[in-house]
Length: 475
Image (cartoon, rainbow, N blue to C red; front, side, top):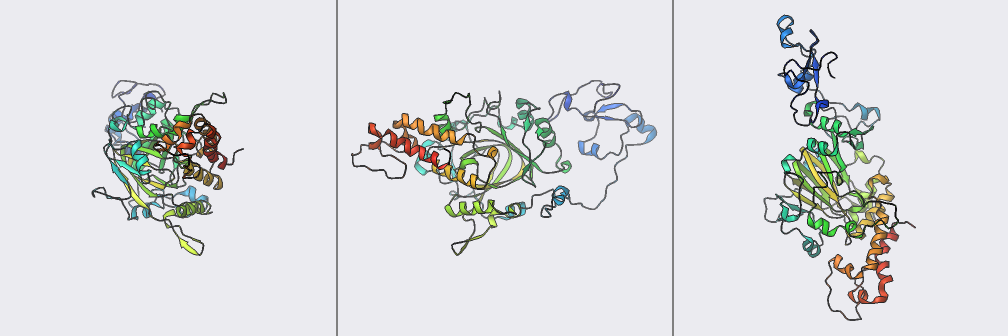
């Protein structure tokens, strides 16, 4: 609140002051009034920390202290207190009581299968150099495991809009606009805050000392690809741009002026203790993920048929929030099964992480973190994309959490490769080699080079691509 009679602080004799982290203009400056003489002061001009100011019962300026004594403090109990989640209790969720930690976090931390990067071959993930991460690697391995690149460099094609240590919440808010709405996730309920927040509110929350935050909150879906100076100056890793199917096929074919789905550059901003429960990225998209600040830990399961079956069943559980997926069991065909081959991956500042299509994962934040990442579809992953899309429909995932205009992308893919049949196998990573006319299709939906060279085979090529579109159930 600003002073009623004077907007000049007697300490600095100014209306405004040099701002600290997370403050970008005069509107961010906090004031406090002496309860004796009623003079207003800038908070930052006083010899108090933010937490100390919050503990004041009333404020006495230095002049008034001489006659009225120092500022009295609020009375505090010496007993440790658990922050009770009364919102959850009111809704009957007695499982979520302590607001300082998500109830699944202790199990997450205790999970023992962890990738050991000190070993030459750590297993579970592939550790590459910046030079080794490219399209040829994806085609030769099939990208069957997540990839970690430590201390990633521009050799991957990744380009940040400014030095990594300068990509902060304050910088993101400045470039995006502090009045921009942002979806804020309440960690305990795993639901979006309502009403929505502005970036100014989020920035103020993020820079609030941990002990003074009322709840744990997280931002994981701020898309900034069109933000001037932030997303427009960011370049994704080349392996991503080389494989991105939407980049290849998108066009405004129906004349509606639609721009391509905005899923390519997200800013994720998480305070310590944030937790995102198990999920699969929309339509099973692969993900690239680079850590600008802080640390992140992933717990991951590969998309095997059994794991996906268990995941879908878990999503249908009425008490899903109270069941940790890693310990979920179900009897199928007379056999009791549970998720298998899971492991944790610890990421630190400077890491680039690639998550393959369809992987089931949860994420914990050991330290405040700022991430830039994004999603993309690929031609080679279309079977997995449509499999996950069908799971999303059966589990009634809201449309705003699915890949935007997914069916249109499938139609455009069919049309593009109908008209560019020479690119089809190349974009799948299949080498063109001399073949005989007796060659047959080796995999469902994939045409052989001889069939591609047959001018009469264009309908078959379109059918091979559009069959994935047909699976979506769209007429």
